[in-house]
Every structure is written in structure tokens, then in C-alpha cells.
Image (tube, rainbow, N blue to C red; front, side):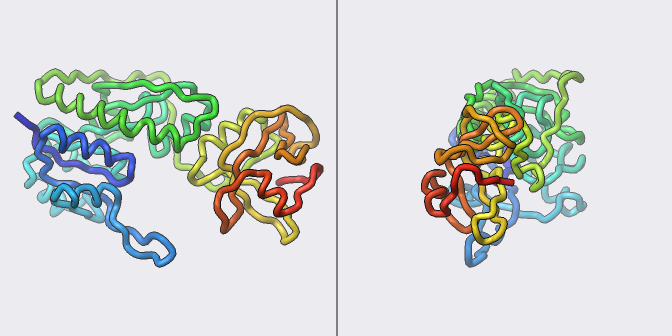
Length: 310
């Protein structure tokens, strides 16, 4: 026996889960994903990673701009799915969609709920300096990531791990968890527990303002911010490099020793004084350039100790 599944997802994070579901023998009756978006220098329309994989499997793909019409609900109900699996789809599911599958809609969420409900759970966990996170299979309801949880898998966050590295480790972990969750659902053994009322934290979208490094903060907080925003969108500093203020992304850094006025470059190795302690810049990316070691960047721009970074 296999389940009839509607899969709903868009980015790279969702791809391994779709592959696991197909490989597990379930019947994927439709794949919902966001419409192709302009990308690259030519701004050519590019299908989402999920759409690209679905087409390789020969699965029917739908890219509706809304799910809130009666027509969208009728189309969804016509799939006669047992369950919908949602992984970073990028669109809110209205009640008519949530109620359509016989066994409900399951969401793979990249956090240990109820901590980090919302849009950016991986980045927020790293930015907060959490030493553990994970993935959860949750039964969806109208609230934002408020549904009961059926299965959880935990993973440690290393002290220097970036959100990009954590993302890549959680992808296969989540795919395996959802595959096991569907197996348990098929056997009638998937049990859900309400999320506790305590410990609710929201993973709000990253804003441009918080991506800018504030050197008055402690070095550890800035280190976690750099890790959490790497590789995207990238924490950044502003510096006058002889052409007026320029924006420079910091993709990797490490804690260091030293003190001075916050924002002062202390040495040629890229150590910057913070409000408490110091941060050594390891990998940076100037505007319009590729990522490079800080030493190469400093030599090219003739950055000297004592330079003030903003």
C-alpha cells in the first residue's frame, strides 16, 4: 500500500524530501511550487529546484499564484490525496486546502518547535547562538507553525557552523524524518502531541538593518550574527576604502582577543575591536566581487591597523 501525496515545496531544502517520497513508492499526484522567477544576469525565468526535480520524475506541476479561490480549492480536492506534504512552500495554505486531504497536511519544519516558528528558523537558531536545533513533522492548522508535532530529530550546532552548513545537514535529516513519518502515517502509527505553550519563539524574516554589524555589541554576538547570515544574505560592514563608504559582506569570522574603540581594525590579520572582545574577519566579499580571504582584501585596499569600520 502507498499513500496518494500532494507535495508542496519550492527551494533546495525541499528537494531531498520529494526524492525520498518518490523513492519510497508513494504516488505523488501533484507537485505545487512557486512559479518560475527571473534569475541571473539575463533575468531569465528559472523554475524552482522542486519543479526541476518534479519534471525529471514526470510529475504534474502546478504553480498557482494564490490558493484562496474556490477554483484553487476545487483543483486541490480533485487530486483526492491522502495527505499533503509541505516543505518550505512559501505560500499560506487556507482552511479549504488544509481540510482537503483525508489524512491532513504535514509540514517539515526546520526547528525544535515551538522554538523558532516562522520564516527563518535555521538562520535565527544560529544567530541566537543555539547549540541544538532539528527538524519536526507537524500536522498543519491555520496558525503559524502551531500544529501538533508527530516526530522530531535533533542535531547539534557547532560553535563555528554557518546557517548554510546547518541547512545542508538538515536537508537529508528532514527528508528521512518525513519519509519515516509517512510510513508511520500509512500504518496508522503516527501520533501527534500539542506543542507546549512555553518556549514559543518566532523566527522573523531577516531585515537589512539587522544584517549590518554593530561593533558596539559583544564579539560573540557578532560572531553568531555572521554565522547565522552566511552565506545569505550576509552580515556586512561599511568602510571608506578610498572611494567613499562601501558595503563589505563578512561570510566567516572567529573570536579573537584585543581591545580598542569598537570598530577599530587592530591588525593586518583582520581583528576588529568590539564592544566586548574582538572579532577576526576570515572571509569577506566586497560589493560586485567574489568571496576572498580578508588578507587578500586588505592588501588590495591597503587597509592599515587603526582604520575605523562602521
